[in-house]
Image (cartoon, rainbow, N blue to C red; front, side):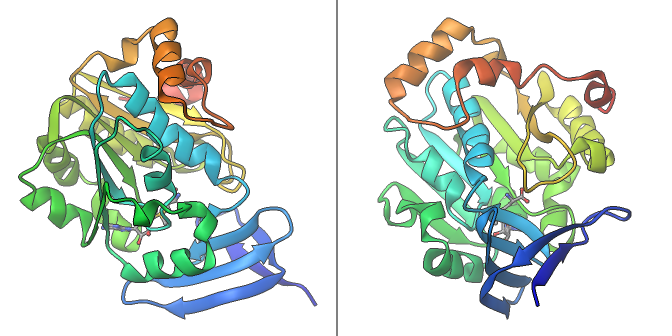
Length: 281
Ligand code: SAM
């Protein structure tokens, strides 16, 4: 009898993945972690029943939330990741030899511990990279007290429920901006607009008040159901205007092999269909 993991993130829509082999199921101080094998997605981690990362499609999400801001920025040297406990975001950011330092602020040590053991392919050694500083803390507290500056800040959080909720507030965004170096870029996991339009609108309203350039870009990640996922983009610099040929030169120079990101995909991701553009105030 096949067991199914049913994701109940949305009020009127559910997705179910077969649990072909359950590898881990436990509560941490913050959330319930399950790791299981699925015939389509490989190993899957859910937090409080919501799909967070899968072996099969995480490359799309992690490539688009790292290479877009890092390559658009003229000289990204210091990166801050809020969340990202599975290590995939750190993996992709650290593939840039020019990135000198990554701070990763994850609220739940259990996620890091269990992903290192049950999903080692996601972090692929990132946790052992000497450039990585792992901080176990609430990202909201970190940016409140932070006295450092970063060229790129990536919010790789759960959805705005539970511990992730505070990472979708104007206060958090304002404090995160204070941690950006001049012309720094803030990017955020901002849900699937077709299903979570209000989430994008709220973030964009805050970004419009904070940044000269506030918009989002899109990529479809199969396990984040409901259509393309939005990534919030906020900066006072002109990085989004980086032309294709410059992006191509930087991408070639970085020598990062990808399965989703290309400079053309990068620029195309900012072309918003009207139903998404209308969600940006
Ligand atoms: N790709 C996923 C998505 O799009 O929903 C996100 C994956 S990542 C595992 C999400 C991480 O955010 C989790 O490890 C969770 O513990 C962490 N997190 C949630 N709230 C947080 C907070 N306030 N501060 C730091 N990390 C947080």
